[in-house]
Amino acid sequence: MFHFLEKNPFFFTVAVLVLFSIAGLVEILPDFAKASKPIEGLKPHTMLEVAGRQVYIKESCNACHSQLIRPFKSETDRYGKVSYSGEYAYDRPFLWGSKRTGPDLHRVGDYRTTDWHEHHMWEPAKTVEGSIMPAYKHLFVKMVDKNTAYAEAYTNKVVFDVPYDRDDIPHSTKLGTLEEARASIVEEAKLIVADMKDQQVKDAVQRGEIPEIVALIAYLNSLNSARRPLPTE
Image (cartoon, rainbow, N blue to C red; front, side):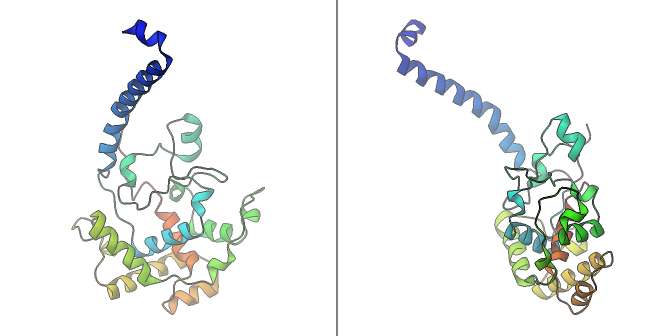
């Protein structure tokens, strides 16, 4: 058999491809099975965080920032503990990213604050020396659509079985009706703007309107170990 393959490059190539394909499946398939199970204690995003995630995607933040910390010392020293597949169980779509023009953000909620994000999004170069990130001042005046955030969360619940009505999740995270979701978005936004300086943003929230910057900061703050308790090793 081996002599036959050695004398026939085509069949040798096919045999190698089949062998490596089988080996690859043996390695990959168990991880896919694990990925379908959320880590214990994982909480779904609140309505405000869902709205902020929509802003994150709309502004293509994932084009320059990853949300995937690989198991290398150089990465864990800089960005925090390695990422686990079960942390992404409720994310649709996944925002792993494929390029790091800026730093990984998977644990950014553990070391950045609302106040820091506010200044950084207004003038990145003044917050981080040498930053090439553009300013996002338009997020301070453009408002989020509460109905769209509710629609996405409702879709995730019905289609992907995200447990928004589970008994053990915080009341602020429960889906409820559209009117209840609108009210919860405003109440959570008030907690965010309490740590912000921009008075126009504060006034907007008091009127029941949510500037996109508030939702985006809420989402970035949610990228932390409290929402996704990591396994102990």
